[in-house]
Length: 249
View 1 (cartoon, one colour):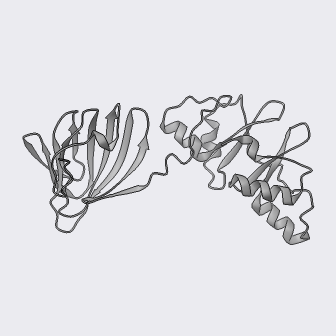
View 2: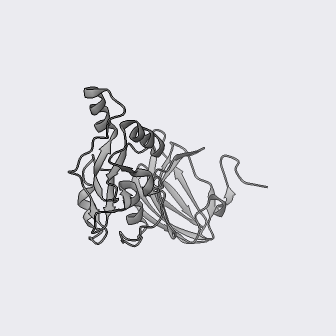
View 3: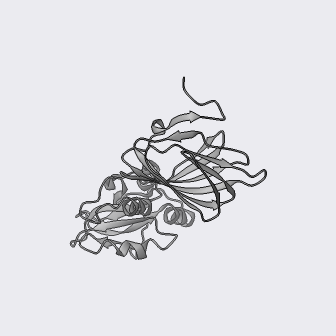
C-alpha cells in the first residue's frame, strides 16, 4: 500500500477526491496543505453528506481535523488502543512537523504482530494486509482453514466429516501439534492407535507416519493444528494409504 495514493491537497475538488478514492479502493483520503502538512481526514461518507447539502462537484473537499494519528517517534504499541475501535481501520503516521510519512492499516498491524515483525513506525515492513484472509480449502474428508502462515509456523483449523479420515502420511520438513476441539475419533501414530476426544493433545514428530479418523456417525471432528518447521507446502505430504485414492503411482 503506497501512502501517496491516500494523500490529497486541501484545495482539490470533491470530484478529484472521489476519483482518487475510487482508485485506492479504501474509502478515505488524508488531506494536506501545500506544504504537505496533514490537516485531516475525508471519507466517502463526508463527501456524500456534503453533496447532499450542496450538490456541487467543484466544491473543495470537506474533512475532519479531529482524527486519530500517530507520530513516527511514538510507541508502536499505542496502535493496540487505537485499533480497538471498529470504526478505525487506517491510521496516518506523521512526522513532528506534521507531514504524512506513512499509513498503517489494522490488518497490516495484525500481520506484523502475528509474524513477530519489528515494531518501528519509521520503517514499516511491506506486508500484504489481506495475508490473514485465508480461504477455506475443501478436501474429500472435510475442510481446513489456515489461520496463520509465517516463516517457521503454520496454524490451521481442521474439520473432518463423520466417518472421514485423513490419509496415512508423514512429513519431512515439519512437525505437527494437534489439539482436539470437538468430537471424537482415533489417531494412528506409527504402530500405536490413540483414542482422542475434546481436549486431547497429540504431538507428531517429523518423519512419523500418522492418520486421523473421525469415528462418529453424526458429529464432525474439529481440531487445531500447529505446524513447526522449514516448509509447509502440500507437497511435503508423503501418503502411504488413502481412502480417497490420492496416492500418486
